[in-house]
Image (cartoon, rainbow, N blue to C red; front, side, top):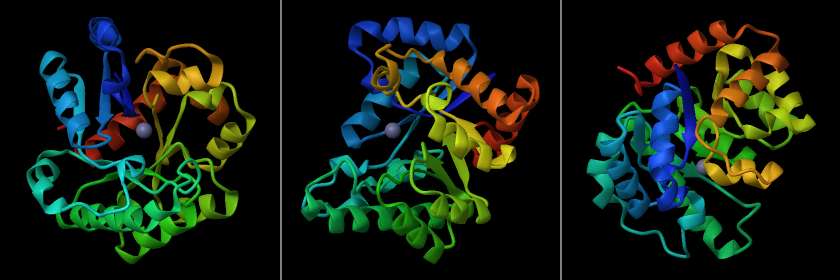
Length: 248
Ligand SMILES: [Zn+2]
């Protein structure tokens, strides 16, 4: 079994969905489909009824935070039902509207506290705010419950997350980008997970619309960089998946 620890099935075009379900099932892939917001979570819930290998998770992506912090308590049931929390985090790189930064921090802190309260892992976006994400997780003692998604920050902050025993998802650029290979080399193999981040991530890298089975190339790319055997790596990820509660 392959496990994609961070994707967005709702990013696929409607006309692609049947092909997407088939690709997931025929390749024996479990996918964590991260929410961007409430509407995205509801879409992912619908997809999971059609394809049981899709695991919808709830969170509010930093790109969807505006200048005001919404009332987040209305999402309590979603949080309770979600096997892990995500996608959540901070983005001070792609998001240029600085007036969203404080609300982003408030929303992220809220989800970190909720994840702690319910003893759940978090799927975390850290772009351009790696040090601050670390500090917030450190204060709540949640670094060991963190899955750092597609890390691309500096090595200094990376090492802090590694020392704190956080998990990391390595993404579709592992076969294309030297910096990502360098990052993967530094992370202990027991802390590495794999992801595709939806169809557009690969498209951004090399122009190819990424189907879920791209996760196989990500697994192989990681194995090559870490010099480990594919079956051993699959077992590792499966074990971690059991620990995070996404597979019972
Ligand atoms: Zn994502």
